Every structure is written in C-alpha cells, then in structure tokens.
Image 1 (tube, rainbow, N blue to C red):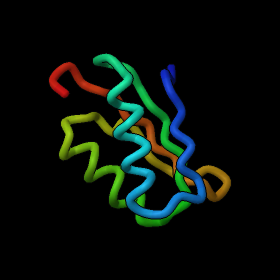
Image 2: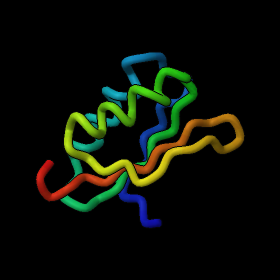
Image 3: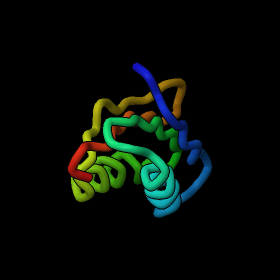
Amino acid sequence: MHVDEVVDARDLMCPMPVLAATKAMRRLGPTQVIKVLATDKGALSDIPAWAEDNGYELLSSGIEEGILVFFIRKTEES
C-alpha cells in the first residue's frame, strides 16, 4: 500500500496521536494515505472514532511488534 505520510505518535499519550494525525491530514489531498504509529492503547478506539467522525476511510489497523498501526485514507468528501 502506498503511504503518503507516516505519523509517528509512539510514546505520545491521548489526545496527542489524534492531534498529530489531524495535522497530517490537513496537509494531504483527497485519496492520500497516512500511516499512524502509536503506543497508547487509547488509540485503539480513538483513531477509528476520529476517522469516522471526520469522514476518513480506515483502511486497516493492527499491531506490529507491539506498535499500533493504522492506515487511513482521506476521502474526496473530507
């Protein structure tokens, strides 16, 4: 999957991963993708809820080597 920007929010506590992702999304155009890396377990619910609230498409989420990883696409409408 092509990633346009990586947001490294590891070791940041809520709400900082969401704020970092918001800043990244402002820089992107429609259909571009960010990859968010986080270690705060709150991101498991915060990032998907944030994506839905803002009209972004959560492409996938998971855990890689103890790091939470989210791929989110900016939609034409967002």
